Image (cartoon, rainbow, N blue to C red):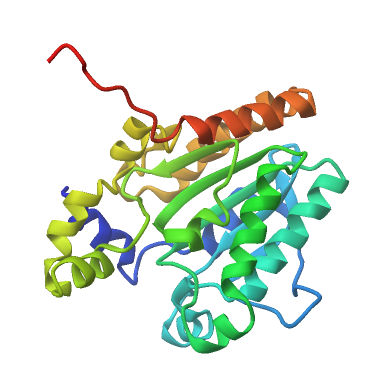
Length: 264
């Protein structure tokens, strides 16, 4: 599939949403709500549970099941209180030495006036800052759409994986086309230019690997995801804290590095 075809696939209303992944991956769950400052944001589901025999903190962006649920969850575009709730759970995980698993599926953070009034930019920036120094392993999986800072606020992780049809981009192709060509109808061209596919992200060093969707076999896909997450968390949990943080820092420093061919 082309990049734009993959984008349409992950935006399809019938695509599996974050809440279903939470139920399939984590057992003995206890959900935590609220940011302790303003409100609860239902677009982010978070809590503690077991990934196999590993106690983890899970944080998942959820686009909703039906139209009413999607409206309530802003179609998976979190509010500032959602990111603050996520950070509260991550700091709690650090305190109790639990690894963090983030499942990302968003076009981007909520961009309405009320989100801005409540400090959307600051909430995202605080997540990025705190995640880079969080003294516990973090693994993020892009399960659908990874849009802009709204996705990165839950993906400043030690390891990032992507489902095979997932996309990850600094801006949506629609937004990019509107800015560059003043024509959102050219989103297909923008998608190609932005290199948003899982294959692109692995090649560029933004993601560590791709998880097969097995042509829609959800149970098989989740079994693979459990294996990968358990393996990565096992490796990361054995690292001394200082080495874990140094490796996380170096991971992001390597992204975007290139060498010019001076022989030409």
